[in-house]
Image (cartoon, rainbow, N blue to C red; front, side, top):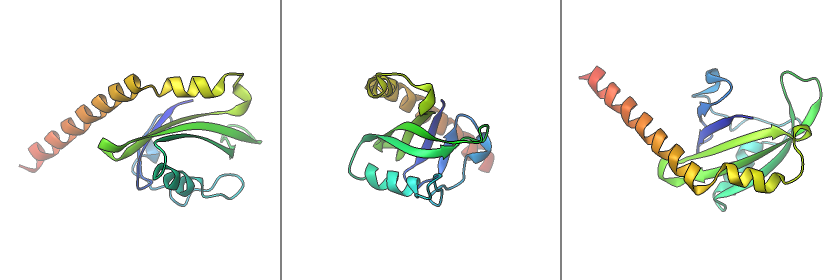
Amino acid sequence: GYYVVFGLDGTCVMHGENKELEGQNFLGLQDASGRYFMKEGLERLKKEDAFISVHPWKNPIDDKVRQKIGYIRKFVPLNIYVGSGVMKMRLGSGLNERLKNCFSIQSMASMATSLRMIMMGTLSLMVTILL
């Protein structure tokens, strides 16, 4: 799997597998069953800080539709959520605990610090260029 960072408006901020997706809005994205899972997930994040998502997904490198399992966690100070997922066929037992451990408070705090530093550096560079 890989990590993704999305704004709470559905815009991809960082995509660990495909940089070309960054900056695009995914509110209209549907899973293999036609569900608007991004919209549904953002609605859940209004009520929950984190959740496990399961939806049918066709991986571009595979011909079959398979279940994709992900863990999504909101980070309010930056108005984002961080997520990661894996195709169900690759998982064994203990899924819930392993997913939750990947998004521990310490790892989220470390990621948030890194994101803040990147954002501050980007803003500083933009101001320098504009001046």
